[in-house]
Length: 78
Image 1: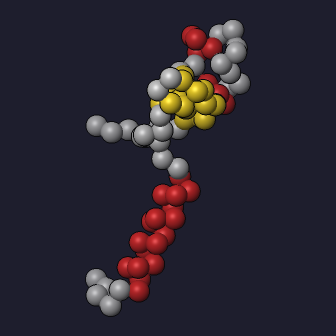
Image 2: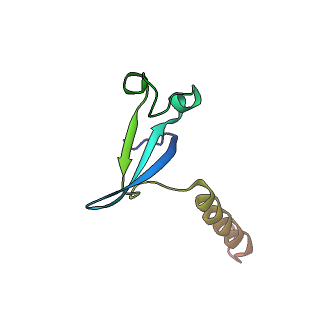
């Protein structure tokens, strides 16, 4: 089952297979834990990715608004 969980973008790093994006779970970030923190390995979750499954909230809102406006202007309202 797909899930959606908030992550904090913490940086990029160039690697041989391209740039990787680094993310941290929101709750540990909110508590002030950073990658350099002595307890980071035990109290935070860090993930890497190429951005393939990352989505921007603002872009999703733009698409939803465009869809809502098209439906409002459609002559075949339900």
